[in-house]
Image (cartoon, rainbow, N blue to C red; front, side):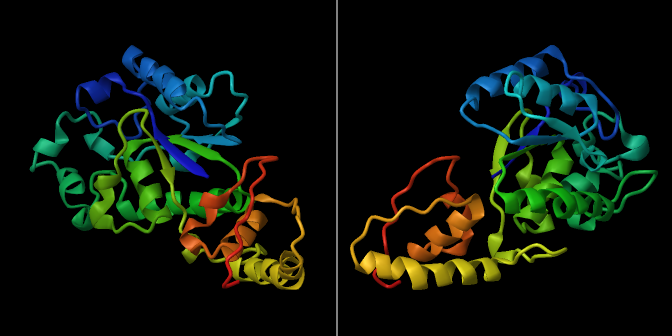
Length: 265
């Protein structure tokens, strides 16, 4: 599973100042937000955390994951969108004369100027992070946490869940808000030697046909011990669960589940 969190509050957040790539630290309220989030989501366990190199995100991740043993890796592609000379501007969403105003009200028609980063560039770097890092982690079935920033998070969410650009800001997270992302397995395309879902389904499906069906018909109690994605493929085919709910079937380590055979299968 993939989870994404926005950093805790800073003084610039409180003053409604545009932060961008400025390395602004958390304030005390932001640190308390991270501690409160740790209590709220204490039942979740993460195999790895990828974090923006900016200190407000790193401090949030360290507080949130304190005592969990989860490794935290920084990736420069997760830094916040750059706003050039307009970083530090107050109440930019209320200033039509500011070029960045368009980004917040009509992102489809936003054009970056004066050293600000374009949405095309933002999508390119966050998209490369999805391709190079998230897709392999997703295929392996790990629980992954990303701690980053407002616009950066929106770019990841929109690409990962195939949300149109006009709904970019509808995905904005509050400070220290955690969101579980739903990967579109339906649109997954294997690259760089990875196995396709079609191939995975073909081999696990043949196991259902050649082995499980005869055992089922004979009335035996059968145990299968396997792996995250493989188990999901068996469950989805055996219980006729749509592909979009593939990862909803993911079992925890050593978790046991009784399968309900579909008579259609």
